[in-house]
Image 1 (cartoon, rainbow, N blue to C red):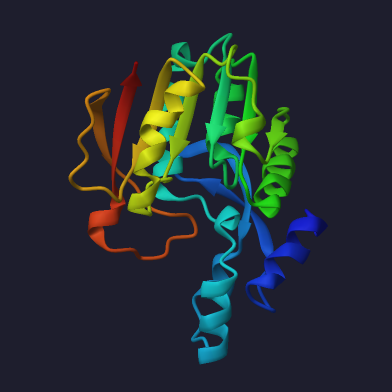
Image 2: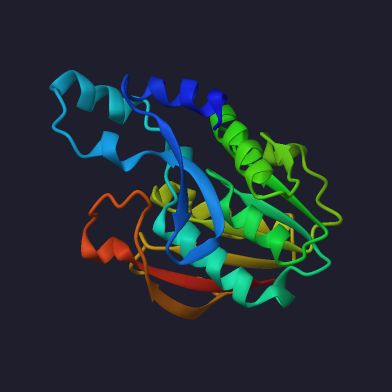
Length: 217
């Protein structure tokens, strides 16, 4: 068990703890995630405020991440032998899927230092190695073949990244369940798949449908 992640999760909730969980749609990838038993009891107002202020996004496998990981595992030609940049890695599920599918190298990039610890711990759990990075702007833009990103458009201000991604790679694989009026000349819709967050947060049905997009310059 990851002592480091068990310490970090208590920033969000004192009695929360981490357990190894299988992804229903990606059983090949176990992850250290917040144990669901700690998220189902009633919370006090102070606890709710603390959860919102210190949400451990890395401690959940969001629906878009699970869908994109499954897509990569089922379509390894997207990543096999390639250098891949995973933007907003969170738990690391998509980066790990890319390594398991044969990527030459995967850079897990996240501005949250706790997320990078989660990526490292989950990579060890899955017997793969990830390159960790906390600064997108420090990454060499010349040799990345593919950028992958899941659930990074939760804030509409992040839509500007859709163009910036092409500064780092000529191709993009994007999974999103938040933007309903997604339109961009360089992105093509390729699939729509129902999924859920693990542990299941019983989100609105509209957020359980994940759209996959292929981006080309």
